[in-house]
Length: 225
Image (cartoon, rainbow, N blue to C red; front, top):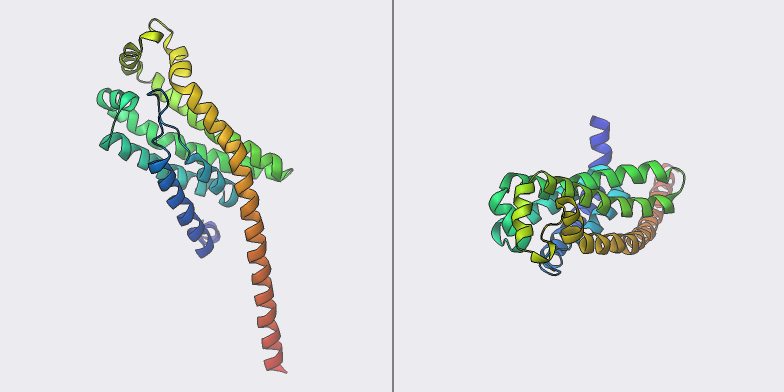
């Protein structure tokens, strides 16, 4: 355990997580409030969660997902509207769990999936991780909604065009559909690109570090001579 902590919580990793976490917060605050047809808000902050899971692993993905969930929960509490107003009013405990758990688990699973598949193919691992995060996020959201069916029925009553529809179908079609496909597409398009940029930067950083180490060794050799 001590070795794992030392390996993960390096200055470089902490700095990278800090940057990604700031990005998560900014994207959630300013891009997570985009609303389509008064449905649930789009979650553009999944992108840095995926990137963190890919670059630093499942622990980083979980930490970034947790931070995202906290920001969402604060937004729901302070400025509830539409769908979130109803679920927070009638089912605050389940709403809290949905906000925090879904992105935390999604980030963690994304990191695990990337590590497993990257042993054979890094590109395939990147796309799979980018796809699995919004899938897990949405699946846990649907599961949470099914745990508060009475509350969802109250919301369904505000949508007369979905009157009488099966509650599971309503959740998938009336609440999730547009949001999920946009998140899914964004992650597939943007996350691999961001990962490629990071790999280039990381390679340059490692090259500079190698050059610096070589120079230090040369200086030590000269001093010994």
